[in-house]
Length: 184
Image 1: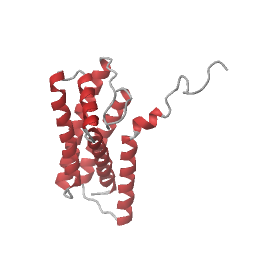
Image 2: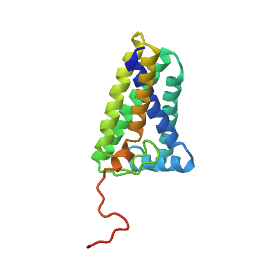
Image 3: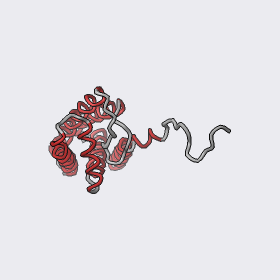
Image 4: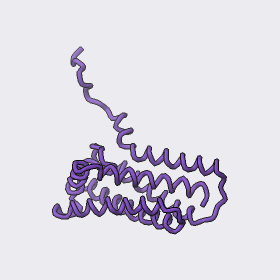
């Protein structure tokens, strides 16, 4: 496994770990995720809780596969991640097209509504996962220093992806800042 495979392995691992933990960090976080799934109007309301559970279990399965230090398990984890990302992308695209403005609970806490940026993010992650599966399966010589840089780079990018909604919210226009007097 070369440096690209290592970096993408870490990137996808962090994204799915943060995602699964954010959704299952407590009953309240999970309930908010269930409401988000229900509000997307992709599955019947009575199935939203079951679908939400299945999503969290599948995301945890990706994390487990990526944690096992066996190439076949890593490739399997990246392939499952690609499939999940394709399903997520399709569901978000359908919801956005219908005008649904439910909060993205992709990583648990964000209250920002689903939108095109989530579709682009998931397509990019799916492309990375496919690339990672191919790169992990290909032999490649590495040095400890190079591997450390690849790990750190993957972890950093994964963390940034997981925090993307929060980062973008920092640049959202504010109509009026709280506490400021108007008309001065």
